[in-house]
Length: 142
Image: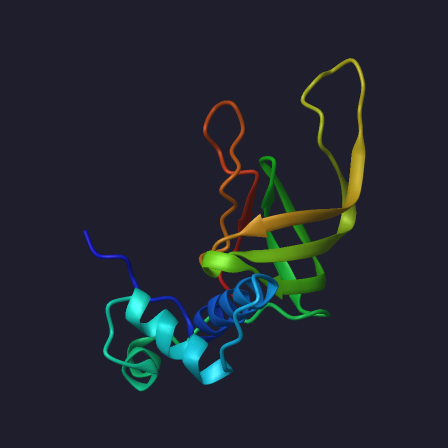
């Protein structure tokens, strides 16, 4: 099974981490050398080759963007407060719901959330799941 090549942003972040890690060990390399090394790690001849094959599209979540989806099984509408592309193509998002969501399944008490931090993949689905296998967060396609 072949791993899909991530976006250029993810590849550049890998090169930046590589350069930083090597620098912490006393080995200095240029940014271009780090990019070439990342390309070789992905089995490509050079940076230009991998950059041409890299996935260029990403969901493009940005602060202020209106979103909708399901959080812990509850439908919501809201806004992206913060968005950051993390490693391996995952996104770290801070979402603010238009209306608070009760995150407790018990009938004995409630706990409402208006803002949450979440991690989602490029499809907008969180890797974390409830005990019955449902993803914590599922964002609708934009």
